[in-house]
Image (tube, rainbow, N blue to C red; front, side):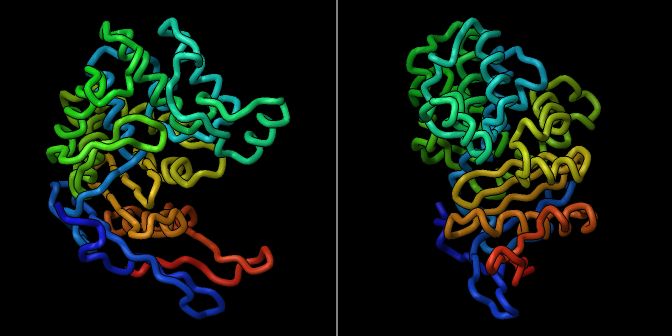
Amino acid sequence: MTDVATGAVPLAHVLRGGIVESVHLGHVVVLAPDGEVRLALGEPDVTVLARSSLKPLQAVGMLRHGLQVDDEALALACASHNAEPEHVAGVRALLAGAGLTERDLDNTPDWPLDPDAAFAWRAAGHERAPVTQNCSGKHAAMLATCVAAGWPTAGYRGEDHPLQRALRAAVAELTGVAVERTTIDGCGAPLFSTTLVGLARAFARLARAPHDEGHAGTPEARVAAAMAAHPWLVAGSGRDATRFMQAVPGLLAKDGADGVYAAGLPDGGAVALKVLDGSARPRAAVLAAALVAAGVDRGAVGPVGATPVLGHGEPVGSVEPAF
């Protein structure tokens, strides 16, 4: 295993008043459509905990084991959503379709990510809840998969539960990398290690699937189609993952906590990155630059990646990619 601290290089400079105020280090890998490495900064084989960037891979595993949902619910299974009202309603509908309710959720209670949604939730007298935690779509889909497969819903988060064994196998198969470490994600579900290049490889496979002859209707193609058709459900208002997918037809983009991002293109190109300090601040700028290196038009992704540095609420600098 190559630790993330090994070989990290500058990915982004934080400029304030024309002076470099901070530098974010990390790793980036860009794959060409043929799977060859087009660009590598840092160590492409670094071992990462890809956090929520793994959700589309886990969704493939769920479909392989009987999950039957429409594209909107499948997008929520891949989501780190804002818990805006439509997100919460969608999660509840996903659960109801399996004969379950939000009381069956066992993810970590939390406030909505969206500030307006969080204010409205609290103003209505609610406390932190599993259904408003950003991973509730994944957990609802996990429970629905258990119902479809005839597995117990109790203890579905357990590492040795048949659901989690199935999802671990799916992550290993899609990335082409053995899962060497399993720990617990912030939402309480098992979290499987992979490598940065393995993560990019998996996103390339997913994004290309709807366009490959003979792959229509496969779990990979279904996940890609659901995310591309419903980017707002995958994140929400103002979120860069949603905006990247809206800007580039067929692009799959999924952010993850602690400075992770992954994206796949319909031609089979892909990007994965890890910011060394775990910061979310440079991710959009770095992803935009990496997508340009993958062949995406700068005019499409540049505005999404633009990250101003503020002084008294006004732009006085910016976060700029170092490549």
